[in-house]
Amino acid sequence: MSAFDLKLAEMLTSRLCHDLVNPIGAVANGVELLSEFCDTMQKDALDLISSSVDRAMKRVAFFRVAYGFAGHDEGQSVQEVRGLAEGFLAGGKVTLDWPAKPEDAAVGLRRGGLKLLLAVIVLAAESLPRGGRLSISVEPPGGARVMASGAGARIEFAAETMLTTLMGAREPELASLEAKNVGAAYVGRLARAISAKLAVEPGPDRVSFVFSLS
Image 1: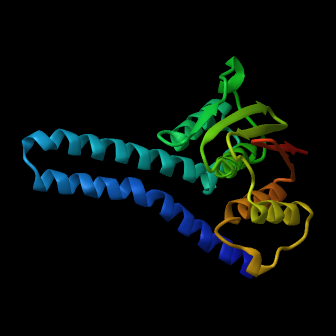
Image 2: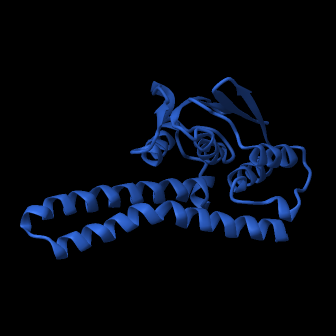
């Protein structure tokens, strides 16, 4: 493992922990409320615990496929992956526009394509600092498009530079890896590993991520 890939693994782990801190912390707060307040407050505490646990579980399920070994399953369907994306974005500032199709229950993209799609969804959501909408279209077995639209939508310069470097089959400098582009580094590494072509198409208050599998 190269120094770059080791650092990438470490930063991804930190990222996952960071994303799980809020819902798990809310569970702790709910338990504290139960122990400190009278019966009239217990319903609020239980509601807080329930919603936080649900959010944490949905994120764990998403991360397991997007970043874990489970994402290499060739039998995954678009329908299953859509459910993971809905859970990941639930309760946030970014909404999902991904119309269902009858054929979605069949096997989806080949060679880890759905894994790449989930990683791209995370990157696209990060391109919407003020919230907005992710519009997704998938064309099995060849590829997908994810368009992030909303006020101020843009991909961070550091993330775009990282993607350009990796998709150009060049090795990025270790010092270039940072919190702002760790997601892009993972997307670029994964795209190369499954021989996918990936393009970023910016526009006014929108940015599209398009990939195809050769």
